[in-house]
Image (cartoon, rainbow, N blue to C red):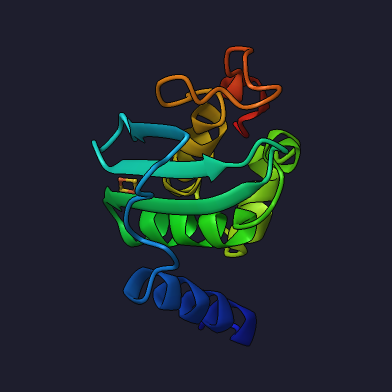
Length: 147
Ligand code: FES
């Protein structure tokens, strides 16, 4: 029988899935990245507009996938709207699982971490000449990923 905490998490996940935060595209994105979960093919893309000070002034996601992957993307985008790139860099896979809240099996953790991987790669993926300060190193998201 579900505890009330489980029910709260379920409700929070469904809210994000049914009424996502910033699903769509950023008109003049400075950074963008898309990736899939190789286990199922579900996709998340994240667009960012980063100002010259490194602040994320706009962030939107889009994608196609399970409730967990899409709700997690919505939570992540909401969390980092108006934040700094440096905060994204410090945000570990464990932080992502904590933000999501609900306890997940290892396969479901991969659903949850899809948007986290995409965001970590997006900050190193400038569109055209829009390289932002401190975003020239290649991404190393797998180093931080929870196993
Ligand atoms: Fe594909 Fe969840 S089942 S990301």
